[in-house]
Structures are given as structure tokens and as C-alpha cells.
Image (tube, helix red, strand yellow):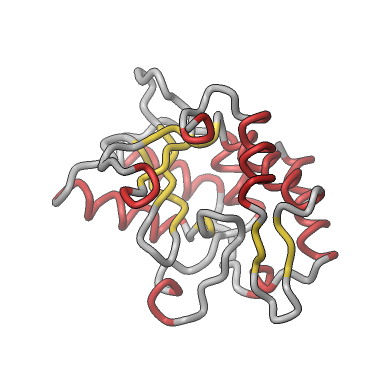
Length: 192
């Protein structure tokens, strides 16, 4: 996983992606593990590696105009904001259960990782986007965090994702779908 994060880091630096300027500082591995334990979530090594690589974007940036898209579904947010979303959900909608919503978009859509040791989608990433899926249910979108990172790398390499001169992300949705379906054969979203 770390070698893929290194490749992604190089790509983001080569294209001078503005997200590099707004990533938060990483927390320690012990702090992340403690937070997962307090929420009764399974520890996922790749999730920890992601947050040790970069701390995510500040979740409040969705509201203050500084949010940047990392890929088509938004950006991964700082671990504290992800836990806040989960805590709020546990008191209201109860959508996530043992799934941590660590990716957020400007439209309110989220992508979460299933951190339940007894789930059939354990370790998979699930999309909550009623406007895209026409459902209020979570739908598998990436087979794992590692496959998600691999998908993003391929999307940048093959120009499904490219930066415009104004610093915004341009997306070729058809090419993204082809790449994503190929790399995530177990996930339902790309099959539709």
C-alpha cells in the first residue's frame, strides 16, 4: 500500500494538485487505533497507512469554500471529522453502523469503509449518494482502500482525471467507469 501512496504522491506533485496545500497533518498510528477502538471499529492497516501518509482535508472545508476534489467523489477528510460524521449518524439516520465515512463531497455524498469484522463487505468502500444510486442504501464502490488508491492512480495516468489551468479537477466519467470496473470487479456501483 505504501508504494502506491508514494506513486500517488508523485503524480499529485507533478500536476501541482492544490490538495497538497490543504491536507492536514497526520495523527500518530496509536491515536488512530485508539479512536477506532473507542468507536468499536475494526482496525484496518490500509486505512491507517492512508492517514499516516496524509491527514486528509479538514472536514469543515466543505462549508468554508476551501474544499478540493481529489477524485470524482470528493476527498478524504481528516480522521476527526470522519469520526464526527459517524457519531452524528449514530444519533440520527443510522446509515453507517460500523462503516466510517472518511470521504466527503460538496454535495453531501460520502464514501465509507466497512470496519465490521462480520460483514460480507468487510474492508470494502461503500458510496452513500441517493442522487447517483437512486437509493438511500449504501452501495459498494471500491473493493478496498488499496484498490481505490490504485484506481485513482490509473485515472490520473490515463487522463480520466486531469487538472485544468484554474486548478479544478476535470473528469472523464466514461473512462473513470472503465478503469474502476476493471480494478473493482466486486463493487456494484460500476456495474450499473
